[in-house]
Image (cartoon, rainbow, N blue to C red; front, side, top):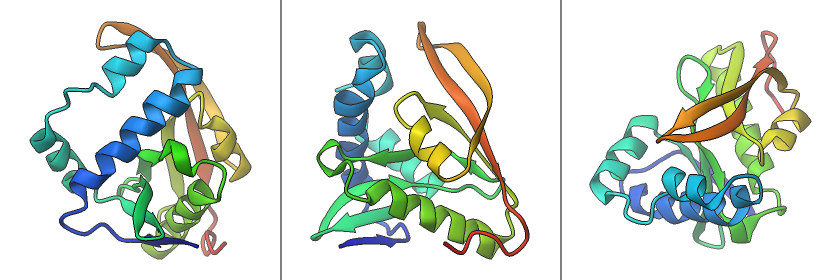
Length: 161
């Protein structure tokens, strides 16, 4: 069973292996090894990482006492991080996280959700009704990266899934 809960102080370090495996083992199917290493470097500073996670306060997906995914929803409707561990793919973790995001948006009165979605995650977002607004190619740490700006407009009272 997958349980999604709010972020708690002390979760910071456990989010990094989730992020790292999602990039290095899942997103690597769509991006070059050089871009993967730039995106999720092996030598990431743990203190800077902790500060970043504390700033976004993600929802945490747990399965069997282990963190298997995390995703956030900012007050402006932006989904910044959305990652599921490589070993927890295709078992409902991403769907559970997205349902929690939609529930939170409804509770907070957020009517527009948007994110810059990697090539490997666009299918998930589309299954939840997000549409591609723009394909994007940009320089990320000196390397060309592609993703899509995706949006979902919610009606008042929507999000109860």
